[in-house]
Amino acid sequence: MNPGVALIEDLFKQIIGPFAATRITPLLFEPDNVEDRVTHLVKNFSNHPHLIPPFQTLIKSLNPQDIDVPLEEHIRFYTTRATQLWMLVNLMNQVLRTKELQMDEATGKLPGKANELLKYSNEARALFGDESRYKDLVFAGGLIFDFLLYLSKTQMLNLGGAKFDEPIAQAFTRAVEQGQMTLKVARYKKKLTLEKLTPAAAFVRQLAQLMICMLRPTEGPEFYKKLSSLKYTEPVRLSMESQKFGVHHGVIATFVAQMIPEFTPLDEAMSVWGAPYLSWISGLRDVHDLSGMAMLGAALKERVTGSDFKGSGRVGDTLPELQFLDLSLTPEIKNEIKI
Image (cartoon, rainbow, N blue to C red; front, side, top):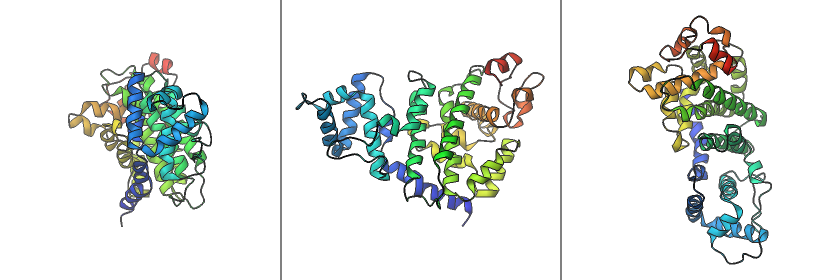
C-alpha cells in the first residue's frame, strides 16, 4: 500500500473517527446573546439526555435551595460558559475514557476545573481576546489540541511509548505565534475577505503536522525537527514530506479543516498550501489570499526575517511561491510588526 494512503487511513481510523464520535462540534460555536446561549445548551442537553441528571445533581450541590427548577435556571446559575465546558469535557470522555477527565457520576463533579482540563482551547481564546471576532474559531482549534493531548494518553494510538505532552505544547505555541503574526500582517493586505479565518489556518496547519507525528511516532518528530533547521521554500519542504510519508501535511490539513464545519473554506486553502497560485488562476482569489497569508505568517516565524525583504519589500520577490500575493513589507510595516 502507498504510505500516503496508509497514513490517511490511519488518520481517519485513529484520530478523525474518534473525534467525530465525541459529537462535540455543535457545542463549539454559541450565540452571542445569553438567552440564546441558554436555549442552545438546552438543545444540546436534549441530544445527550444522560448528562442532565449528573448536571442537575452538581448544581443542586452548589445551590441546595433550588431543588425543583427548570434546566434553564440551572444553566443560568452555573453560567452558560461553565455549562458549555462541563458538557465538552464529558462528551469528550465518553469516547476517550481517561481518568484525567472522568466525572464522578454520583456528584456530577469533574476531576478538576473544566477550564483547566480544556487547557489549550481556553488558552487560545484568552490569547486572541475573549471578546474578539476570532474567539470561537481559535477555541475550536485549541479544543482539537486538547483532544489530541487526552487521546495520546489512551491506547487508541500506537505511540510505542512516546510521550506527546511537550510536542503538543510546542505545536500549540507555534500555532498561536503564527496566527498572531498573520493577523499583524493582515492589517496591511487589501481586500482580505477571509481574514477572520487566518488564525484558524495556523492552528490547522500545526495540527496536521502534529497528527502525522502521532501517527508515525518513530519517524515524524525527528523529521520535522530536522526540517525546521532548513530554509528551503515551502514547495521543497512539501516535496520532502511527500517523499518521507507519501503525502504532505497540506493534504492532511484539508481533512483536519473538515473536522470543524465552521472552518470551511479552510480545506480549500490547505489543499493549495505551497502553491496558492492554483486558486488564483482558478478565480478563487479569497482562497488564494487566505492560503498565501497563512503561508506568509508561518514563513515569518519559521525561516525568513524582515531583512530578507529588500528593495520594495514585495513578498513575491522573497517568497516566489507567493508571487501573486499583493503585499509589500515596507520598512515601516516591518518595524511595526517587529520582524
